[in-house]
Length: 139
Image 1 (spheres, helix red, strand yellow):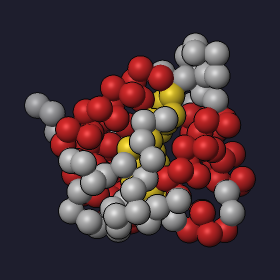
Image 2 (cartoon, one colour; image 1 turned 120 degrees about the horizontal axis):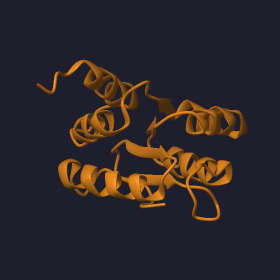
Image 3 (tube, helix red, strand yellow; image 1 turned 135 degrees about the horizontal axis):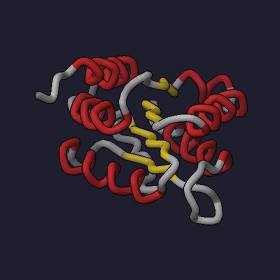
């Protein structure tokens, strides 16, 4: 995991990927644009360091994000989505209230959510920014 949420009122991001390198690299990228107030928790790779997802790591990351004012969760694909869904079922009702899962592209959505979170917005607003990133043309 990349960071522990600060109790500073800023929404955190939880990045879930099959690859620990993708999750960490994306966390580093988002930290550059979001600044020091936005906590970013990376949960990538299987427990043995291979490609995959580790449900316990995902749950821990989501609990870490929920410990602050709230967190937006972004995922890559397949078992990452399943791990997040399973983790949602393990969270307490209070924790779950502070988690929003964005249906967004991982990279573009994380950058957009990070920038939004840096303004002090709500989880819902940061998730909406992530989801809107889907429609941004690259060319």
